[in-house]
Image 1: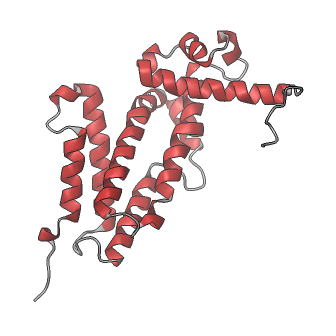
Image 2 (image 1 turned 45 degrees about the vertical axis):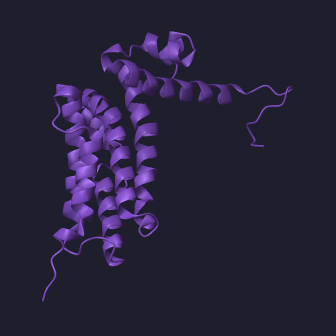
Length: 218
């Protein structure tokens, strides 16, 4: 049982209660943005999702943008970063095709959350500068590309991918295609896309894993 587990006779401290409320607000912000977008994610809507009074939000955050930005940094980015950071060590565990399909699905899901939030954060210079200041210690979106490239290099060293692949270029093309798919989906609508998410993933994976395109020297 963790130190914070409560027995019937324990009362949570004010500090613990404040931490719990803050986390509820951040998780509610993500849920609300997913359901209603940035415009519909008012502090009232976030508070309703969290099951708290709207005024409680202002005890922890200055405004709605502060809540959303903190939610991105505290929950969305770390969750994806942890997943992608473990990727290089998974070379050789599942088939490259299965692993790449998983990576691409998770990356598109991450971008679906991130793109509308980042659009808001980059709408004003002050918000953009505040976000960039938090990207310390080598953190940032480029880390995902590096991790995917390291994974592809690992699979190449095991002979499980065609030898002509450039890991870094392939990683950037994969993640760039994911970003573009989600951007088009959110700006044009799914019905106007040439390829569905599933079809695009299948084609990208086939392109990278198809040994028919491998060149060999005589």
